[in-house]
Length: 114
Image 1 (cartoon, rainbow, N blue to C red):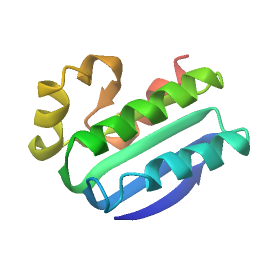
Image 2 (cartoon, rainbow, N blue to C red; image 1 turned 90 degrees about the horizontal axis):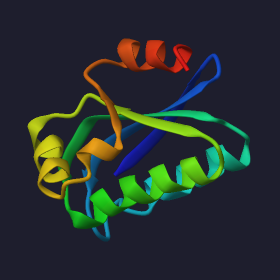
Image 3 (spheres, helix red, strand yellow; image 1 turned 90 degrees about the vertical axis):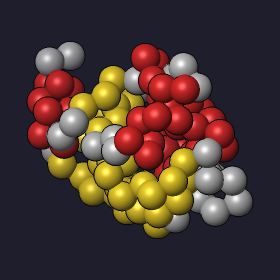
């Protein structure tokens, strides 16, 4: 799993590449989100377009990251979910917890709407 962070205005965009599964990259997302929250970022966008696989540990990391953001008064949105990511999130019944967007531009615009 590779993680990159881009900053666009007041939004931090976390780009994930690879497998978001136990033992491979499941803690990287949590670490990056924790660091962004420590830096006082309140708008975090997670790009899942490069995720090739996700398991229950990866799903758990997304939920943990969302809860951490909410606990710090920050907002986390996700975008670019392929079926290989959308299906596990749907099957685990946590997809409705997230604000999900097809494209980065739509997610960025939604942050501006409060």
